[in-house]
Image (tube, rainbow, N blue to C red):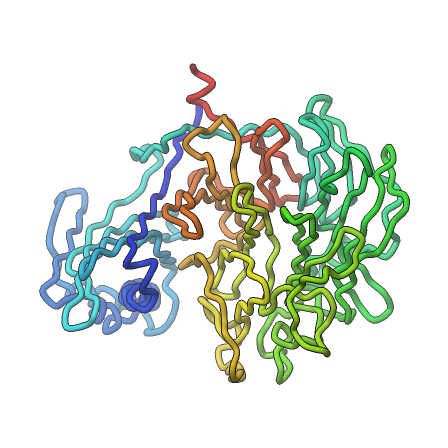
Length: 510
């Protein structure tokens, strides 16, 4: 029997999109409630509420009873103040209209396997947002769900992959798949066979061997040349190592049968270092025929930043996005970052961007960015832009006392979207197929954290609606991609990695 699909809808008003400071104030109010209830802080809970607010609660013998904020807050003085009590809260949606707002939050209590949805009515009073009403419901497996305008379902069509990272379709049946913990392979979705691609460079880091050190290296993106049918060129990013450590490397090679020949190194993000995190490795071709590459800053914690942060240092290749010609040369119309800047720079201030994709209609490049504690973002790539890391972030730092330097005369580019909880977004794509008519033009974004899959309705450069799919069937997801005929597939980040076909049950019933 098909499991129900719960869909989260987030409608963002013009006020929310255009006035981030207003939204930030409202978020701060909601976080007073969430953090206060998660860390036994009654005073912080009370701060979130209007003192005459009503909390509509229920229990088996009393369907509805009212609780004032002060009494409700007192329920959280039983534990040690500031100590986590096992509740996990996430803000799911906000909709602002002038001085009133509706918000939704998810409250998890993993130890008791409980999940609540809280709904809030807020009003701005004396220049401060306050919760004036709250209701909650316990979500059970048989709870009615909000159905999408389509009825997506998952079908495993291939498995036995070692943490697959990327997929490049040769045709609708065959594809190249990069295994982060394995090899570059060719899979056949019809015969269910997997063939190793020979000839891969020997400087590939053996990610299985070093995984005990917390490593996330391996083979990353694989993409086809826009003229693949005539030149058979593919591009692969991976972790390369030498005696000094490891770094992100990009090669171009010719696919000849089931092997690579004529391998050419195009880009090496020196220096080689011992840090084993945040390589980046996302790649896409633009409508201009240029190759765009993301490179992470490689640090796990901000306390290890040098005085000039890596992602802001124009002489350091890490923490940047690059634009190259297909042969690795530098386009003449790239932005000028100065005489001492590293070649090929297109944008700076990047922490750990993995997903990058082309908008098929506008020609814009969109990319996902990993934050530390929250701070996950969707950005539109702009020529010469600085995306701010680590000077600014929409999240928090891992190092609580980290104080980034002040950079004079630098303009930072705001994200198009940022989540209020951790998603760890990865390989995104724009949907152009016919199987899901209501999704046409949508941006689809998978995530590693909690195994989420998001669909965004796009209006120009604005994300107007967010829909989280398969909330009751989560799996760590590394990439979502269309086949040449518009079929939708997703890669799961598992030891027994899978290729999942996402089907529209409603259309199949017609």
